[in-house]
Length: 484
Ligand SMILES: [Cu+2]
Image: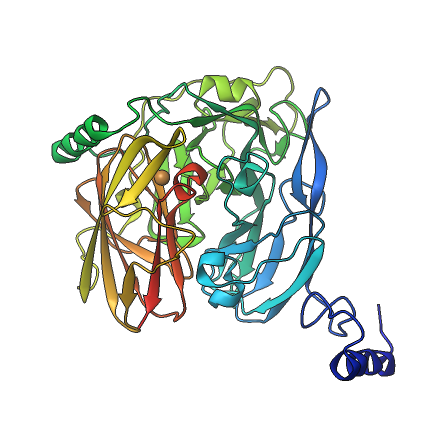
């Protein structure tokens, strides 16, 4: 749509001189001359997971997942975000190294997209690879807000030099629907390598003894599950030919859950984690992904038939967490087979026998859970402090150019998908094993385990660190880094 330039100037003059007209919702409102690359509209809508399961939730552009947004690395992009809901919203560009003003976290100072308003944002997308966008508002006890809704979508940033050496690319977004709170503290499957540390277990039991509420806090459980917004058996199968090499880009879009994925009779060759190429490709029988983690893996289609590619959790897969893989010329009931036990180990994809560069400074953070401390919800502390949305006090000051080693000690029986905004980090030690070269923006910290990773303070501006489990981040598990 082209707008008459004189009209626009006149409108602008009216606003600035007479002050008679209400200001547009943003500095560049709907009448802006420059075309945006993408437009996202946040509104309530319906997703048909299956004919008998049509869910109502908040969506981007009326669909789940949100549209796949493709950007070019280093080339400025403009996105118009329209918010048709009654509450302010934020769109976070997860995994990108961009300024705080557009990153999409209120804690960093990003302005909200007002209710029934819009905000135009511009940024230079980077780094290349598989990223995502999602809402970053606090949900607290409201299961109609935050990542409990359908506000999540994939981003692919094309590298400046595109290698593209695969037959096909398929994006898979794993997501649960219809959340409820429960007192049933169900123990999720633990697929992570590494042994629990005794001192951390002791710390947890003394926190349990001190807890005013002895009962465990609320957990979230879900009724319905799907890949790309369809329950297993609904939607189109992935149709393949024998000998084809398919590159799967898998995203765990859950608000709270760790997910797994297996394709019986096939192996995944891991090529990238969180969109960043791994130093060492390796074959694995199945995937484990924490909330917001991504895995890119090539599967060679060399076992003809009709298969269920699905989550290892039987209940969740039976309620939809899977998708059918159908070879050309084959039909019939899709087959599922439980894979052999396998532990997910990030160091498998790292550079062996090399250490990352020495860090300039070390920061140690101990994570403790306080059962039911906040009206029945567990409260989380980092070195004894729960993040406060009221004060938004920064916990650490970093200096530009310095390399920081963060060591996290998990004195709890939960897995935490740790996420750092606006920076990538390099894994240094996982489950007691040293590693180098694995670059990520979310990493799972196992129960009663430790993890170390490095980041270089190379993107000045307020920077948020948090657990990506929505229940954890909303109840204390956050910290702000400020630049000196
Ligand atoms: Cu957590």
